[in-house]
Length: 191
Image (cartoon, rainbow, N blue to C red; front, side, top):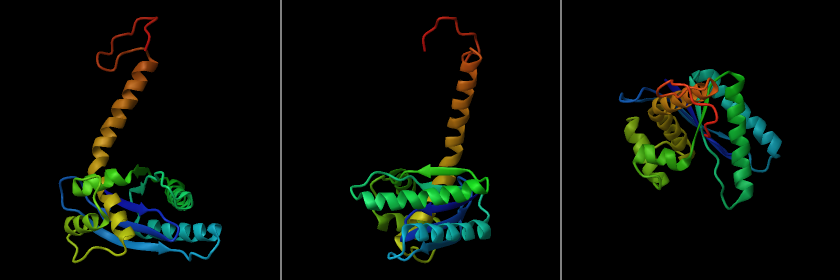
C-alpha cells in the first residue's frame, strides 16, 4: 500500500509518502512541505496548496490519502486555515477517485509512539526509526505527514474490517435479519 500523508496548514502543509503493509518494514518514498507566503490572500494560498498536493499525487500515485483530522483549537483563525488546507487535500484526492482517511493527532501519536500525548520530538524520533532514516525530517510538519501515512498503513486493515461489519449489520437490518444469526426479526421489535 502506498499512502500520501498530509499534515494540513496554510503556511506549511506537510506531505509524506510511505509504502508498506502491517508487520513489514516500511519505506519512505518522499517527504516535503508545500509552503505559501503568509502575506498572500487566503484564496491564492489555497491554490498554491492545491498545486502542491496535485504535484505530489501525480508524482507518487498513492493508493490512499491520509489527512490529519482538524480539531478545535483556541485560535479560530489557525483552525480555519488548517481546515481549508485539509479540504483542499481531500478535494484533490477525491478528484482522482482516491480514498481519503482522516486520523486525529492523538490517534497518530498513539500509533507511532504508544502515547496519544507524545510531543513533536518523540514523533519525529519514531518516524526516523520506523523508516530507518538518518535524521528526523524537517520541519516537524514533514515528519507529521509521514506519521499520518504510517498510522494509516497500520490501522487501515482493522478499520476496514470494522467498516465491513458495520455495513453488513446495516444490510441485515434493511432486510429484517440479525447479522449474527440471519434469523428474521419479529415485527414490532423496537431497536
